[in-house]
Image (cartoon, rainbow over all chains, first blue to last red; front, top):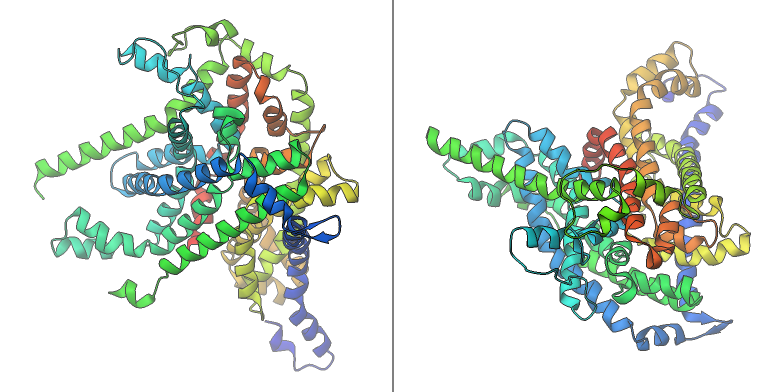
Amino acid sequence: MAATTAVRPGMTTRLRRWEGLPYWLVLPTVAYLGLFFVWPMLQAFELSVRVGGVWTFDPFRTMYHDIKFGQAFRFTMLFLVIIIPLQFALALVMALVANSSIRGRSIFLFIFILPLGASDLATGLIWSSIFTQHGYLNTVLQGVGFINRPEIWIDPTHQTRILFEVIAAELWRSTALITVILVAGMQGIPKEYSEAAEVFGAGFFNRLRTVTLPMLKPAIQVALLLRIIFAFELFATVLGIVGQSTTTLATEAWNWQTGYLNPHVAAAYATLILGMSVGLASIVARLLRTKKEQLMR
Amino acid sequence: MNIKARHLKTASLYVLAIVLSLWVLAPIYLIALGAFSTSAAVYSYPLQLLPHHISTTNMSFFVHSAGIIPALERSVYVAGLSLAIALAVGTPAGYALARFKFRGGSTLQLGIVGTRAFPIVILAIPLSVTFIRWGIDDSVLGVSLAHAALALPLVVLTTASIFSGISVELEEAAMTLGCTRASAIARVVMPLAIPGLAASAIFVLLLSWNEVFAASTLTLLHRTLPAQVLAVLDQALLPFRFAGGFFLLAPALVIVFAIRRFLFSMWGVVVK
């Protein structure tokens, strides 16, 4: 760009300034992310291993021996393991419907991605209106004669039931994001690939397995990473549906910070959450590593 | 494929599409129904499934509950302020990533994407300690700074894709006709970038409006709307929960409608 004018005397300083320009432009972002991302993260580590100027593992010990820790840990992990296959299956079906040739597919796609706007708190409130004892689920079930009297769905002694209610609510909410990512990925696949496979007699499921899914691998990878990270942020959906009787790791961090006013144990939870989400995310990234040659096979 | 099989395939696709749409729309319909009825209606059982008596009683009960209106005002301020910060800080970086090849550029891009990999929890907890030291705990500014940090990576990436979609020749043409780079950006690039920037800005508003973890960790008395709703959730009456759920959801749905096309191009960028 500016290089064409560089031969003229006196332009060299100007040229040098152009070379520095991109760095000046990215400086605010780097500084901001350093101040509000990197620094807090380092500080969280410090808070979790340093109490009153003394290095210690006490916050982690307190966290581990806390009566709620086991329940919160189990709930978060079970949630993650169960929701991943369900959510990806649902999102894939939605994306395939939206990518098919039926009339009105763009309207359907718009409907599928509506919950993208729903916050975790709004989702919790919406689904508590469904699962509460005198709520919509019981109204419908009793209306069709499936039950005789209102069933208690939100029962702290039925942890499995609560787990699946939270999963239903999160399936409703966050599948939209996975669908958007898969649809964006599908739009990048040339139609010719699938058509060629069809010409050679590949049925729908064959094409899905051998053409669409391998081509979607980068999109699936991004979606899976986000899914894992968001699972560790599971918070207000659970509070909205069941309150404090069932907690997640994020809820516990929040309780220790805002309720028990102990930022050290809260930071220990935050460090655990970070370690687990980064650890799991890098395992997934490695397992799903995409090679160009694999795509061309 | 014969015609019969093709019809069958189309029919089953429609059934699938309608079932999935109902799965998404039914909860929205039900919460709206509860929000626009009376408290007597939400306490009755079985609940009404059709809008027989539409009423704004529950909504006005929610809005006039203690603390809701000031919290709503703060939510609006926080959304506006985090939008201003994120765009002011992030847009130049997006432009740099789109227009220049510079050493460390791709590393930087990766680093910016990578920051999204860190859960909100790890930021909110230490920031609440820092903000006390800075004297901006429990304030609109504190929450805005945190929300802007969350939005910044997406703003940089989306503005980068917006600027790379605008032909560099236009900018060069303006510069050969006597514009400086700054005036070429102001007169040629910006007008073309406005729709994309607006969508990206609206996305920041959505993020801020919905965010509850950082907001409720960083505030105590001066809560944003979601933080206020969360704080009183334990004692909340049914009309409050129904109307509150709808009140939080409604603006978000409008936003998704407004930027529906942009969402796909935005994630298209990330997927590539």
